[in-house]
Length: 98
Figure 1 (tube, rainbow, N blue to C red):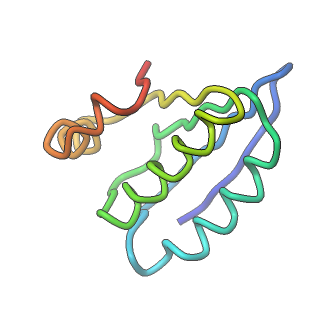
Figure 2 (figure 1 turned 30 degrees about the vertical axis):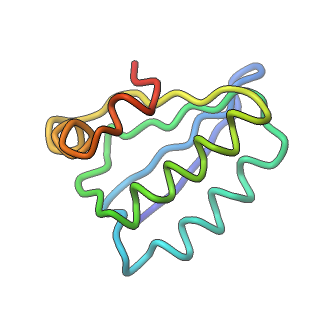
Figure 3 (figure 1 turned 90 degrees about the horizontal axis):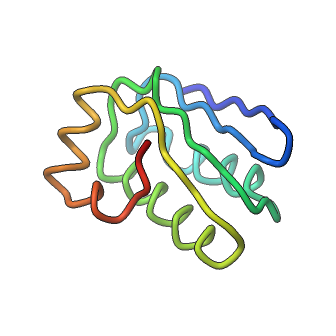
């Protein structure tokens, strides 16, 4: 799992690459938490995310809850596999997906 970020104007874009599962969830959660800081506009780019477990869903849910308090969060470039996971779990109703 690789997490990178870039700032474009006032928006923070977080790129998730690889597999987000129980083996790396703790580290990913800590890194994402640091990146969110006091950002007001965050986008998760999932173009290169090939697998997302329930532990990964939990991380996105925590990020969404935090961003509801301090700004907005969107998710973009969701592939077919992750879209299916979002639809099966109802996350497509919780997250703002572009």
